Length: 397
Figure 1: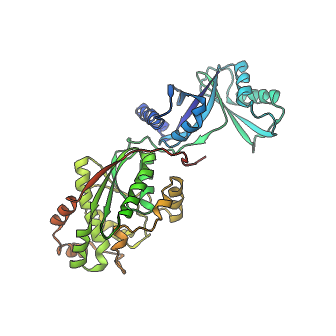
Figure 2: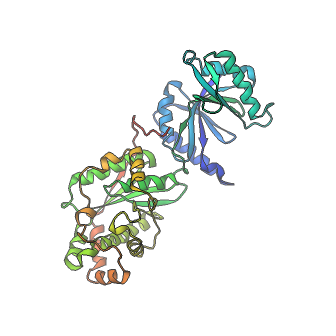
Figure 3: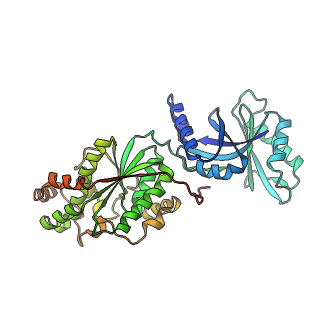
């Protein structure tokens, strides 16, 4: 009889011949997430992973594992021999601290080892009888039980009930690399999180206009990046000063086109960085129709400035749904701090909502685009955002 930590994989188990590549990535990321805790041997048992660790560390380790992409559930499990005598002793150990309060329960049996003598329904009935035999405070309720008890028959029998939901998605790094346009707002950190959930490894690109925007605004972005690093791992944060570009736009172009032209500059600058450091595309926090620059027409005009794909995972989401995720990953409270980014600082009073590409190109002819891009790249500062872990990790149970 031994306590272990069980991990159920998510969507990656639907993969074909490359499934184990995804599994090995997940195992490596689980071990990295648990640095600082003693993790012993692990074994992969017919689609599930089981880790050995000190039982007193289980709560902290489980909180770390919940943050790893590509996983469905994590739980403390009691591993016993796969015979009913051992399972009965395991049930006594599993529920030993729960003999007073009246509870209803249901057994969920699973027979991954098809050579075992009983099928899943028979396992559930047999083990349910063992619970009733040993715990008089328990009563069966198959429709709405207080406690679901799992009996998982594999190379051994695994017994558990305290199951925690994980983030899901795909293992980080299996979906390519993309550069997140990270502002100081609510949306962009959520967009980075959502694409990382799909296996995309990210870097972040932040545009500021110091001294028009303050050092506090830049510090705010760094703190958002640090929160994001808890989920996406270490990444590079590229900082670019866009003040000269905004100054040139304001001096030479019609004001209502400021935001769209500036975003096209961001894509040009971002593409140079992406090509140099081998990012495959961009991620933005745009949601369709949320602001003037996020209409279909504006998005189309901005897309034309880059040959790389621009991923917009929030494109059809309501703001309330975006806020819910921001609160879950603990970026919301930072994002609402009242420090303007360069986009809001230079936003025109009456921005164009349906720009035409020919009009934008005509405005851009008034600018020395290559020189402005070069000047902006000369301000580039790069810092590494290192992964951190917090005691108040997100709850998604």
